[in-house]
Image 1: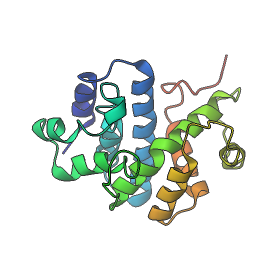
Image 2 (image 1 turned 120 degrees about the horizontal axis):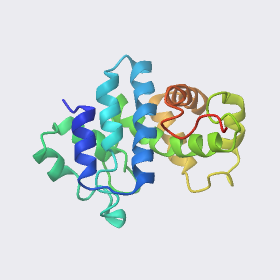
Image 3 (image 1 turned 180 degrees about the vertical axis):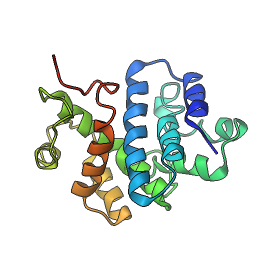
Image 4 (image 1 turned 30 degrees about the horizontal axis):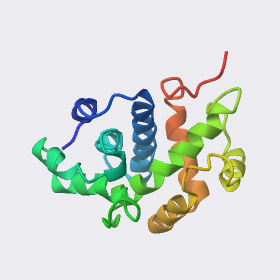
Length: 187
């Protein structure tokens, strides 16, 4: 089973850009919150979330096309590799998310970008963010416009959950790591 130590070691072999490591942490912690919601293995889901963009920096135009073979070679299971590949459903590949892990990763990948952007605008960062204020930002299509809200909505539908509820889980999970994510209160 993939551990966070393995995920960190593997990501360092393909990634150098700090913003990509930050994105990996955001997704990792949000996915950990989803794991708790579903009663799954939090540390395993966090490791999957951390490693999800394994080939992105090297192959941005061919994202996820250079992921499966090296990760299988590194010892990841077919299920772990499939979970990572499924976050590209509809825009990088045709691997449809089927499990709670796959659906959650597909959803939170884009969602964490909006959460991070919203938190950065607040004096107290994410620490006092309420779901109602976040949802106003989510509904404003001009805010964090590069984050694909249709993917988020589709992912939430796959999970059988409302955007509001998934967002609340992710925000709470990310709050626990506010300073590490650069989303703590501004001094």
